[in-house]
Amino acid sequence: MRVVNVSHKLHNKYLAKDVYDNEGRLLLGRNVQLTPSLIDKLIESDVFIVYIEDQLSEGIEVKNVISDEQMIHSVRSVKHIMNNITKQDSGVPTMIREEDLALVGDIIKELIEALEENEGALYTVVELLGADMYTYKHCVNVAVLSILTCKSLSYDYELTKHIAMGALLHDIGKAAVKDNLIQKIEPLTDQEMKEVHNHVIYGYDAIKDDISLSGYTKQIVRLHHEKRDGSGYPLGLKETEIPDFVRIVTICDMFDAMSSTRAYKKSMPVYEVLDILMAESVFKLDPVILQMFTKNICVYPPGSGVKLDDGRFGLVVNYNKFSPTRPEIRVFEDNLGNMNVSHIDLQEERTLFIEKTVATEIIKEHYKL
Image (cartoon, rainbow, N blue to C red):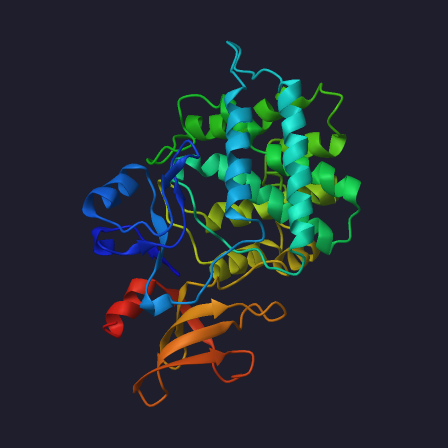
């Protein structure tokens, strides 16, 4: 399978993964042949990326460290929790219901168990849902990334659980942000930006008095936008004023925000996101935690297109766990320019490098496949 942008060029192509709507319900199933009307249905549902199966990508599997089914279940649960938080006249959200906090605990337990079963696998960016589900999907992704980072830092189960709960709830205050600003396509005004920033205050207010939640969880919700140089919010904390457990979620939050597709922006390639985070680690982010974070990230996901520095294009077939920037590639011409499908492991071909990622349709058109 390979990843493609949704357009009417996909007519007659077969879906390789299920696609879900903005309620987390199955929209189109795997193996469905796309027609113009079904493509319109995807576009109307703000689904911008899908996975298709064809001869070009035969045998390539795209999967994350947790199953698609578990991701959808977790996202639905987060949406349910956030929908139960109602904004009062004062602008302050109500507290999270006891049964919803129990649901948060269940989600985290299931995610930790799933990641233990898939130990050694790298986190891969996988798109399954429409853009309107971004906030809920983002919360689950940040929780998964935080658990992986905690494991790399050798944190024990209890601390990992508290940090993961904070990660899952970190954007809970967005349920109280007014005027539907979260998915606004146009640039935000200064006042609107201030309101969006208030989500950390709204979220903290919703959980601060709950004795069943740890201080770790509460401070993550409150402080996950703080930066080492004091440029963050809401308190403008600096350096050691920001706890390590908060710094973990900050990095995971930024990574997922930049690598995800939303209604108003396209996703960035993972290697570009990591470059930005590395630059930010000079003054804003924790460089040690970032180093541990990157050990878990699949830089070039299977099913994505790349251009090599010798001019050839290829599809990523698989990643190398201990050398994430040097995956296995399916190329469609030899080094003399003759059409010939072959397999290259960049871990063995040390003189070849990936120049950039490209849309897989470019590869198909370039080789007339």
